[in-house]
Length: 107
Picture 1: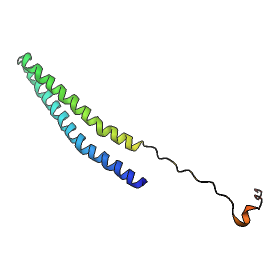
Picture 2: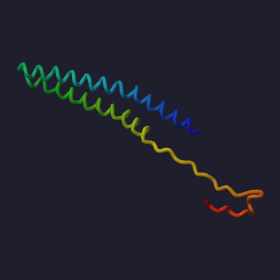
Picture 3: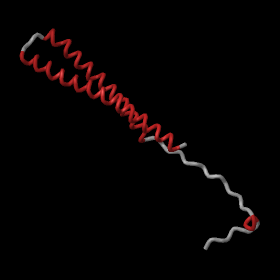
């Protein structure tokens, strides 16, 4: 049971890494590339009003990509820091000849 639970958690972590990590990184990369392109056009001296919406769009892409990248990061942290529960041992009762014998002294 324990191994199947660990495998399931590992598979879920890998799936979130692929489904959230790749789109999030591509979205953030596109936002950074767009931001650099738009900042270069501001330096050249184009109209700031037209560039303002493009800068806002680039910032939104970076923020959304960063939020999407947080999902697999949180999953990895939860997987690595998950505490393993110790199994409790049941108390054994002496049986047979050892039931009536006294405990020998330590040396």
